Image (cartoon, rainbow, N blue to C red; front, side, top):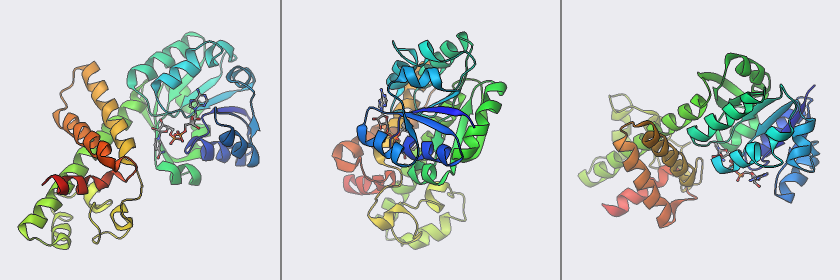
Amino acid sequence: MSTIGFIGLGNMGGPMAINLVKAGHKVLGFDLSDAAMAAHEAEGGEKAASVADLAAAADVIVTMLPAGKHVRQIYEGEGGILDNAKPGTLMIDSSTIDVDSARAVSAAAEARGMKMVDAPVSGGVAGAAGGTLTFMVGGSAEAFEAAKTYLDIMGKTIVHAGDAGTGQAAKICNNMILGISMIAVSEAFVLAEKLGLDKQKLFDISSTASGQCWSLTSYCPVPGPLPSSPANRDYQPGFAAAMMLKDLKLAQEAANSAGAATPLGAEAAALYSLFCNSGGEAQDFSGIVKFLRGTS
Ligand code: NAD
């Protein structure tokens, strides 16, 4: 049994921390939200009074925070994790953040003799609750092996992507494919409607032809062909459009920083931005089909 410090007990972090409690670990939680702290305690977790107290007591620290600025502050800021953790502490940041911040924090942790991985997830709130998340992990082989013991409790698929930052890189590259392909599939359905081609026929043909992709066959953006997709529940998420926009913006930041040409990624970010600004941010990201239909 380890003492695990868990910072960021929100929609994802809350249930992830509880899975560590259920596996028999002592989990010291910390969050700015009193409600999140109370929920953690109600499920058998313990409260830490501060980040500093948590860091000093923990063998392993997991963070699940909104964005890179929060992660940098919690690790590198005054009274933060790096100033207070014991040498050799294992650190796992599962937040989805920019690659540059992930690499900077990891380098700072290693410079102080600690092990760190970036380990963003896919699988959403249901995956967090069910312990079935996919973790994309960046860090040394040694840090990955150490982290895997804990990631196995919170997830089903744990992939070592490479050195520090490559977990975040994998997450944003995958979600850039997803955002672009969802727009492509949605445009095809809107065009089919205009051309008098039945949506079920398009689905049947393209799902076994060269247009086949996950956005079509596992997450079809129009109601009917695939009863499990959010389109059949009035686009309740699922994976919210605001989250997709966040990931597409991170991909663009990374592309600019690395000098990679990603013109369709840039266009996808612009379209999701328009969709979110027109009231779609809380809807499932496949609702972009309604936005495209509306602008036709
Ligand atoms: P959330 O907003 O529900 O939770 C974030 C928590 O962090 C909140 O409880 C907030 O109070 C806490 N927090 C913020 N700043 C803090 C600080 N300085 N100290 C302590 N606590 C602080 O967000 P979420 O949905 O749990 O997402 C967390 C991360 O996981 C994000 O990076 C997100 O992109 C990523 N993610 C989310 C999903 C999803 O479906 N929700 C899926 C994959 C990845």
